[in-house]
Structures are given as C-alpha cells and as structure tokens.
Length: 229
Length: 229
DNA sequence: CCTCTCAGGTTGTCTGCGAAGCTGAGGTGT
DNA sequence: ACACCTCAGCTTCGCAGACAACCTGAGAGG
Image (cartoon, rainbow over all chains, first blue to last red; front, top):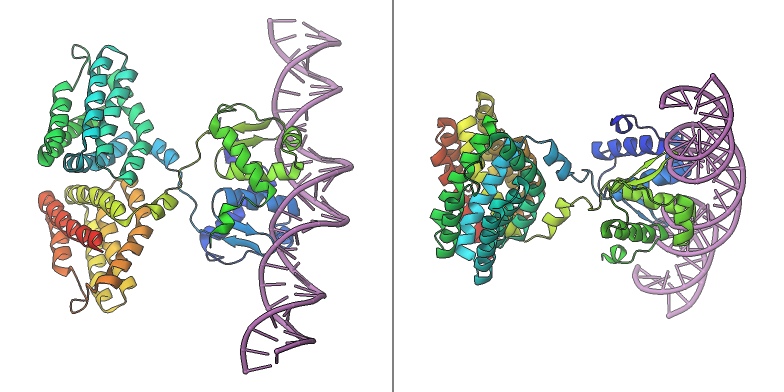
C-alpha cells in the first residue's frame, strides 16, 4: 500500500511541496533569493525548523542552495528527473524502441571506433553468452545484455554508455518476462547465436553498415514479439 | 568561483555526506532502518536538528524515507543520476552525437506515425523558424530546436520525448555558441531552410527513409562543424 | 490462539538562544 | 573624487529542551 506517499502527512512535506510548486511555477527566478526563514515560517504558518527542513529537502533535490549569512537561493526551477522511476513506469515497448535507436547507431560507431581492447571485450562477452545458454533465463538475459553493453561501450561515447546503463534494469525485466512468457529458448537455448556472432564480426571488420542493419533487424524482431505479448 | 561547492562547510552538509557515503557503501541495505536520530546525533557528534536536516536532504535526494514513530528507512543505495549536471559536463560533440542517434530514428518513426495534429504543429514550427530568421542567434536556435522537438513529438514515444527535452538546454548552448563563433548565418540568416522544409515534407508524405537520411545528413554536417570548432 | 492494552522508543514540531557570516550604508583617509 | 574601513542589521547555522503524534512489540486477558 503506497498510501503513505499520497497523503503529504508531515508539515515539512507540505511546506516542501508548496515551496517546490512555487519554484517550479517560476515565482522566484533562478538566482534570486527566497524570503528569510522566519518570513517563510510566518507565511506558511509553521515553525522555523520546519521551514529549515523543507529547504534542506529542496536542497537535496537540487532546487535551492543556502549560503550562510546571505540567504537561500534558487539554483534550478525544474526538479531533477527521476529517470529510473520514469523508466519503470514506461511501457516496455517504448523503452525497447528507444534502446533500439541508441544501439543501432552505437553499433555503427563501434564498427568505426573499436580498439583491440574493445574487440577482446566483445569476444569475451560472446563466450560468456554461449556459456549462459545452459543457464536460467535470467542468466542468459544478463549475458546477452552484457554483450550489447560491450558494443555500446565500443562506440566510445561516455554519455551514451551512461544512458544505456540507465536502461539496463528495465530491459532486463522486460526480456526475462518475454522469455518466461514465450518459450523462445525452448529447443534453441542459445537463441540468436548466429545473429550476435555476425554482429560482433561486423564490428571487428569495421563494417558499419552491416553492424547497423544486422542489429536493427534483430531488435526489430524482438520489438514485434514484445508488442505481440 | 565554485569554491563553495568544494568545502562541505556546514555541519549539516558534512553529516549528509557521511550518511550518504555509508548508504551508498551498503552499510545499511535497502529497507533497513537507520539508527535513531538521537543515536546518530551522538555518533556524528552533532545536535539532533542537524541530523534531522541531513536526513531531510537525503530524503530529498530519494535515498531515505522517514516514517513517524517507526524510524528512517533506506529506500535506495544509489543516488538519482543527475542527468542535467552530467549533460552540462559532457562534451557538446558527445551530446550532439547521441541526439543525432535519437532524432534520426525519431524522424523515421514520425513519418510512419504522424497525425494531422502533428503535421499542423510541424507547419507552425516551420513558420516560426522562418520568422526567427530575422532575430538573434538565440531566437533562431530556439525556433530551430522547437521544430526538431515537434518532429520527436510526432514519433509518439513519451520516453523519447522526455529524453529529448533533457537534451535541449545543452543543445541550445552548444548551437548558440556555434553560431556566434562560425558566422554561419551571415548572408544566409535562414540557414538550413531548404533542408528542414524537405524534412517536414518527407514526414508529411510518410516517407520514412527520406526523413531519416535528410536529417542524418544535416546533423552529421553540423556535428563535423562542431568538432572543427 | 486471538485480541487488546500499554510502555517504550521514534519521528514531528515549536521555541528560544547564541554563533558565524554576509551585505550595504556611511564614515574615513588619501 | 576615489578607495578603503567600520559596523549595524540582516541572514543562516547549530544546539537544547519540551511536548505531541505515532509505531512497535511484549504481555495481559479473553
């Protein structure tokens, strides 16, 4: 029961919420000073310590910043996005779609930029995926995702790598569910071996077009399967 | 000078940091209860209100959650990724590269999924971009980004739309800088008019291949310009 | 074995106090 | 006229104490 989250019970939570709303609404622009603690306490009708804790909560969320002797200043008007939560709420098909966008292009970049180290990592991940063929669905999915992560890493774009990592938990859940539901691996426990092998080879050869199209076809196929479930 | 951020001046900040470190280090697993406020105060050598404010900061960051009468519980061991900050730190070329990945595929999806409303929005954004041709670099960039945002929106993937919005601030800065430095618009204040017009038409016709390749070429060109700066 | 009661512990909130620090007005010296 | 200094008034910071509200688990009672 998430009833706790619905009722903004404590005064601190209420004060935090009201202040957050005013900040996001733009009542105080970025860089401007908030009213003093005592003033806020009077206007909100709460004690000073309550205001202080509310401001601390906002500071923890990255919206304000206090400077002793000077005041509390607005540092941002938009709260930090909670992407993990957002990913949990999004449909698996949407997640997979974005993942496909990132990864197809990443594979092309990887084919152009891969270093010997990258190729070694790809081979190792490929081996691991083969070994995981005898394991559980979760183990197989983990190995599969690791291989894909290695491809993304070979694109040598740190932002992209971080973004992909953000997707991994949702991806993992979605793929495991897919395997549980569709029996895709039955009789073919090492599902997708040839495709992935071809993909790694394309990256090794530096054949960007091949890498991109192989991966696009594979991801597209899985996406339609996901949509069918 | 960002010296303020480096020295964890206040006791609350120090307490917050120490608690955060312990949580991320796994001293207390997710779901477990932290020691009581009075105990923490004694352990950390600070007053109870100081501990309370530190806990509020962690709560604001999504690491802990307090339940009156029960205690303070760990809700996560990894802090929320601060993607805006991460984007600010990333190189503009990396940002632009990822943006290109997302947007090229988004344009293809948009060509397949666009509704009459989407097309109306695209036309409106295109008009606005033409009008902004007489304005400042910042205004022109804003109009340009709005058009691209409209294309992404037409792909009808909420996750993708949110992701793109996250990129906008960094994109805006990078593009404005590029215009300031390269004089790209001098003598051609409505730079890229034909390309964008062709792009919108491709989406209107539902020609995914054309939309994708037009946008890829355009973004690639800008990317090489960015790398040259 | 189930239910109720309750003592002890915990967080929530307020108030008062003093310390530390910033800021701008106004004076001072050159 | 300009640069520098001083300082009063504001702000946040931190502590302590008090009490309220609430949760939890142990033990009494059915």
